[in-house]
Image (cartoon, rainbow, N blue to C red; front, top):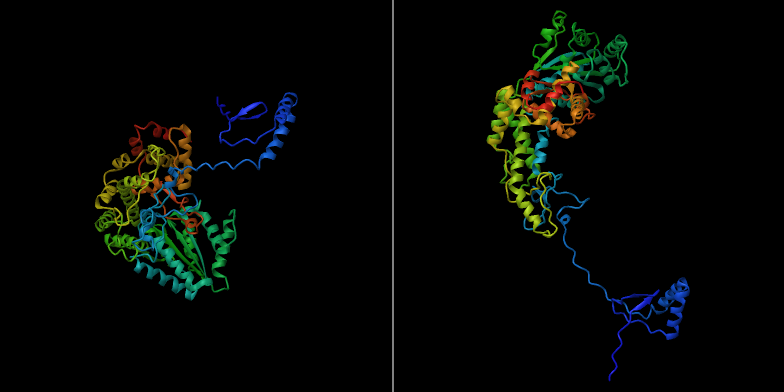
Length: 563
């Protein structure tokens, strides 16, 4: 009878069997050594462990190398479809247009994310409040020549003089003044000292002398209790200085310095007429008759300043300015090979004309036209997102594993979208502009208030309540703090972020329910890049606002009790 082959035994360590999963042959051991190990395990387990380790070292060289397990192919995850951290995000809507590679070369497109800028982002930045146009201010050549002639004549002769600049809001007074001042500094250099002050940022009119002294002399004045000494020092600085150095003082929003006796305005205008005066004063305000109405003594003393009036922009001028800004942006975006794109590639020419005519017919404020264009670009971007987001998501889904693709979440950020290289981006159309203008200019005050959303109404309520308690206008920063305190009082409304709050302020100004002052001195110097020190006031009555929010309990509570 043939002998049955003996099965291969498993190795024993400390009395436990371990399966030989890799079928590695066990080196032969003598029966005496096995018996000695079993007896030692019963007496001293520690000694047995030392014996096992020694055996493993002796037989390690005799054991064959186990086979290598083949690696599994890595399944592509969802994160492979999105750019990794540290990589440069490309503009997904015009990456092929900006690329210098030949059109025949195909490059993989990167899906847009919430932080990826689109082709509309740069265009909207052109119409943002406080944005500076590339080049000179258009359609203000006559006013520019008048300002340059005034400054150059007085500075070259080192004589004093005064000029009053008037005009409705949004006619380019402050912007053109800043542009001309740059030309003056480049031409005359160190022979000119400039103090550009927005009087609305001064806490009270009498402190304007301290601000002028600080800007010209450079000395920090924390307290101005002795105002008489400050005025005496300024008068000596303007008249008795031996250096041939002119002093230019710009008082923007000068009507904020009006007092009961008008002594402050009389003082600054009289300094320009003193003997050996080197003060060149320019006052800027909206009122056309400020000097004749509030300063009659100037005419009696023969101190009447020169007058320069800015007229509202016409429809043709507004259309020219809008087209010029879009043309500069289009040239920077599109290469010469894309000649099919017009200069106004993102706004239809008829839409520009409609925006210009509506604005000119109502206020002539070019800032309102910029706000309308910016909101129109928002609507065009939403159209592009709806049109191309589904295609972009489908392209990314083709490269994902169906087991790892998450279900869409309703709380996600706006859908990513990719505009193909051979497609024309959706433009701002007449319907977009008409929709915006109807809410900005059309209808009564009650209708405009009813068209506001919840957060816009909340900000407006906070403004009306804050003005009533402070008995004066607020800055944007003060309004944001007051609005946050009201939201935290009942915890029924989430406070907006600062960037979202500024967008709400812009939307409210477009609707004509608030008024904003021009950028102050801190904004122009870069200390307040967001313009949060600008003054803001309500353009509606409190009773109209209460009627508009009478069915919203959380907003009615804003008017009952302090924050």
